[in-house]
Image 1 (cartoon, rainbow, N blue to C red):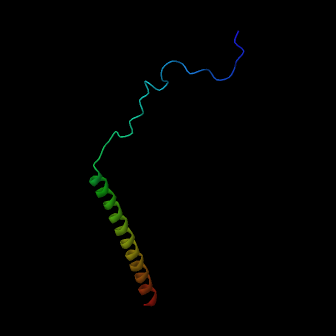
Image 2 (image 1 turned 90 degrees about the vertical axis):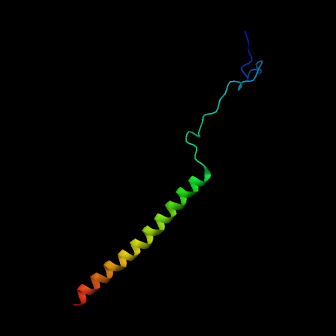
Length: 69
C-alpha cells in the first residue's frame, strides 16, 4: 500500500507530446484588408458625427424660426 499522497513522479515521455493548440485563425485576411476595413469604419463614424451634429443644428434652427414668427 502506497502512503505517499503527494504529486507523482513524471512518467516517461512528454505530457504534451500529442497536444495541438486550437486554430484561432480560421479566416486569414491580409493586413491591408484589415486596415481598409478599419479606415472605412473610422470614416463612417466621422461622417455620422458630422451629419448628426448638422442635423441637430438644423432642427434647432427650424424650431427657433417657428417660434419667432
